[in-house]
Each structure stands twice: as C-alpha cells, then as structure tokens.
Amino acid sequence: MTKLYTFGEMRQIINAKLEGVDLNSSFNNFSIDTRSIKNGDLFFCIKGEITDGHQYISKALEKGASAVVANPDIIPDLLRGKKFPKILVQDPNLALREWASDARKYFDGKVLAVTGSNGKTSTKEILFGLCSFFDSNTYATSGNYNNYIGVPLTILDAPMEAKWWIIEIGSNNFGEIAELSKIVKPTGGIITNIGESHLEFLFNTRGVAKEKSGLFVGMNEGSKVVIPQSILHIDILEKEASKAGVELIKTSNIVVESKGSKLKFNLFETDFETVINNPLFMQNLVSSLTLLRLNGFSVKQLQQATANLELKLKGRFNTLYMKNWILIDDTYNANPSSFKSVLANMKNLYPQNRKIVVCGKMAELGHKSHELHQQVGINMVKNGVELMFGLGSKEIESYIDGWGKEGGSLKKAKYFEELDDLITAFRNEQKPGDVVLVKGSRSARMERFVENIYDCN
Image (cartoon, rainbow, N blue to C red; front, side, top):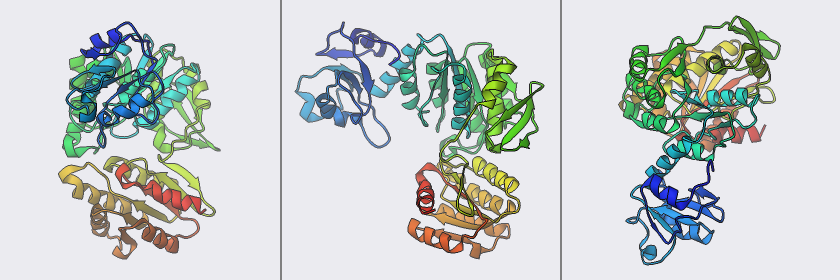
C-alpha cells in the first residue's frame, strides 16, 4: 500500500458511513480478492464483469479482514442483521478510484502513462526496463491492469520511494481514459497508435482518437506526449492537446539494421544497439527513448539502458523455435490494425518460408465486424499466407470470405469448431520450414493451441 491510512481518513476520502470501526485505527493493506486476502486487510466489494465482491463478505471476514467496503443495499440478506466492521458507500468501485486519486497526491516522482490501440503493454514494459536500469524501485502496471479496476490497484500498490511509475491505461468506451487520467495525473505519456480497436462502442478510428486523447485531461499544462510520425487523426489529437495545453512530440523516423543477434539504429544523432530483435517493438522503443529524453535522461544513459534491455512478453510476437519450424505466439490479443501489422512483419522477416495462420476471432468490432475480419483475410493472402486454420466462431467465415476475394484457394482456408480437430488437421499439414502465426482476441483463447503444440514439441 502506498500510504498508511486510518479509517477516519478513509471515511473522508470516499464519503463513507462507518459501522463497528475505530476511526483512529489503521489497516495493514487492502484486497479485492478473498483468495489472496491477508489478516488485517481492508476488503473492497468490487463488482466485476463476472462476479460481485459482496457475495464474498463472509469469506473475507473469516480470513481476517479488518473491515469491508460495501454498498449496504447489496450486502447479502443473511448478513444484513449481523454486526461486523463496515465502510458503507453506494459504489465500492468508485470508492477504490477515489482512494487511488488521493494516494496519487503523495507521490512526487515521475508518472509516465501509456495508451493506444495496441502496443501498450510492450511499451510499458520497455519504459519499465529502461527506467529500472537506473532505479530498481521503478514500478509499472502488472499484466494488463489498465482499466477502471486495474489502474487504481496499480497506484495503490506502487511504492512512494520510486522515482518512476509507469502506468498503462486502456479503454473500451468513451470517457474511460479521461477519468483514469484524472486519477493518474501523468507527468508525461505515449500514445502508441490509433487503430481499429473496441469499435463496438467507439464506432470508428476517429472515435478511438477522441478517446485516446482523454489522456491529456489529467495532465498539467506543458506536459509532453510522444506520438508516432504517421499516427491517424492527428487533427483530433492536436485539437484536444491544445485544449489541455499539452505538447505533442512526434518520434523521429529511424533505419534499423541487423548486427548479428542485435538491431542497430540511429537516434538523437547517436548509434544505439538492442538485443530486442523484434521489428514490431522498435517503434515503441523509439517512443520510449524519446519520452525519457524529454524527462531528463542523457543520450549516454539511454544508450546504456537500451544495450542492457531485455524484453520477452508471452503472447506478443513471441518467436518459438520448434524442431524444424517456427511458431509465432501473438495470442495475447488481436484487432485489425495489429493483425495487419503482424502479417506484414511476418512476410518481411520470413520471405522464403511457407506461412500459415492459425486464428480466432477479433472481438468488440461492432457492426463492422464482418468487414474488418474480411479485410484481415484479404491481408493474409496479400502477405503470402498459404494456409489458414480458423477456430471457434462465425467470424472465421468472414476471414475466409476475404481470403477468397483476394484469390486464395478456399481449400486452403479451413474452419474448425473444436480445438482438437484443428490440432489434428494442422499436424497433418505442417511441414519443415513453416512459419506459423497464432493470433486472436483474448476471448478466442488461442494460447490453448500454442500450449498444446509447444508441449508436444
């Protein structure tokens, strides 16, 4: 926990009513999950997409929770008449955000925020690795804790003695990034790109640009946000940045050269080398270096940190070398922009190899779902993919429509409802020298294919 709070302080911060709690006593820590709760923790009854913490109050108390933050109207009937320490609010989720906003006031280091349609997590990890080279206390968002629940948890877990907090901010609806930015109050930031993500609620890429520009809302005037040279809808970003008094900094174009197992590039009129031999991460590395240069790092420091930077993210263009073929695990997530980018990079990296795609659906695309899946199918053929194995939902048929439109043989694009059937068909078709890309949205759970195939290697 970032700061020791008394229950009296908490009452003021989240505008709560207390029952059975000593105002002057403090609590050790907090939890939203009874599976990891410890004795003395304050338990927040958070409502998520699947479950509601109010259903676990009894278990939290059994495990020694010092009190529970709950909505009195949702406390289970069996507990209504019982006395136990309560901090009563109308919305525990909002209370968690309000508490995180208060905790942020006590941190006087730099807070760098990352948002974008894709590449957020890799950029966050790059910033974390670079900053950690100089400050071992550097703290960053864990996993993909980038939403209304994850961002407050990140802040409340972050150490005050650190010089750098790296916070990832995501969204799937209008207004989320702006609200989270008000909590995070970034001192600097990166927008990785604007692409076709979460279109179910954001409608189109202009909507995505508008939502991502919410990052500026919580920033002080004069703060700087780094963006790629070729970012979509720069007019929207510039308009919103101007309103907030935020300065947009475009990254420099670089030429990347291979040097053995490393990549070499020139930035700030200086040669850099990195062992991150992954072209998909290079734009994110340049954006990170640019932001840190703006925040006081010398070029020499950045050279040193880059040379020592290691990055291996499961499910993000993670290249696995099988016995006589290559498996590219990009199963962490998928949207049209990231899918097209990965296909182009696979073509450039492996021009001589036969290329296969094993794919699941792309989620949250709204009424454009068929069209956008079709576009990706077209891109598969354009980028030299010879075989496609799709798993699990009707969206696969849209991939196949695009595949056929671009002249791909329909015999080479196959749809399976069951994972076991797909694996059997794949093994019958796979040959030495193949390069196989596996990709799909989180809900498609395409990592199951990777785990089955890799375990049997």
